[in-house]
Structure formats: C-alpha cells, structure tokens
Image 1: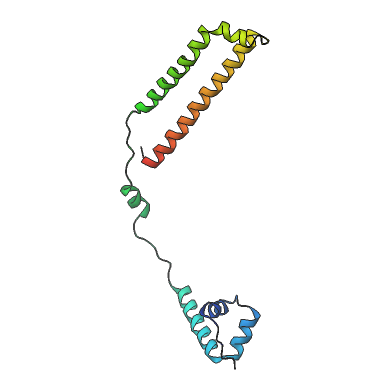
Image 2: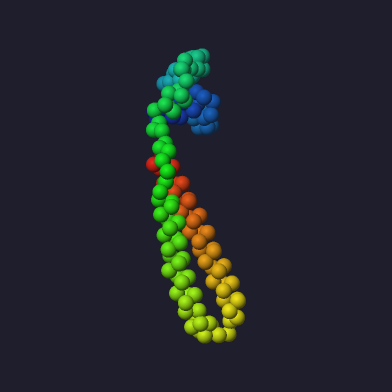
Length: 147
C-alpha cells in the first residue's frame, strides 16, 4: 500500500474518468483514495440530477434599466475643430499664395502646375486624415463617456 495519497484534483479527475494510468493504478491499490473517489462520483452524479437554475424574471431588462442613458446634446466641439482646421489651412495657404513667386524660384526646376498639384494633394490628404482621426477620437470618447 502506498503512503503518498493523491491530491484532490487527481481524485476528481479519476471520478470524472479523465485520470492518467498512474492515478488509476494508485487508486486500485489504495482504499482511502478509492473511498474519496467514490464520494466524488456520488457528488458528481447528484449534481447531474439537479435542475438547471432559471430566473423567473428578465435579467437583461433589469440590467439595461440600471445603465446610464446617453445624453443627446449638440456637440459644439466638432464645429470648433472644423473652424480650427480651416484657420490652420488659411494661415498656411495665404502666405504660400502671396509668396508663390519665391517658392517658384526656390523650386525652379518644377513646373508650377505640378507644384500646385503636389501641394493640393498633400493638403487634401492631411485634411481628410485629420478629420477621420478626430471622428475616431470623438467616437471613442463618446463610448467611454456614454455621450
């Protein structure tokens, strides 16, 4: 007879039928562990016969009623953001337009139409990426604040 007994987890695995060969051999030779395994089998069979718990009320509606309701107020931050973007673009575009002759001399090898095209495309990309980034930020902030 072995004096080192199995752990409770190993005995439970044996009672459930998922134990390894060493565990099965030990339980076959140890009356104490066999008695514990029989107790666990009895407990597991009794648990299988218990009815499933059921609520007689709607848990979902009770939980939803306790959640804070989102506020529906007009968002003025978005208008300020667009005004800020317009101001930034104007503060960059006006000096570029006024000093365009010097810019052309600086980039004399580039055609003016090509330079306008590069500047225009760059500005549009920056504007649209900035707007998209701001919308994602506002959406995440609204999710966090339930606004």
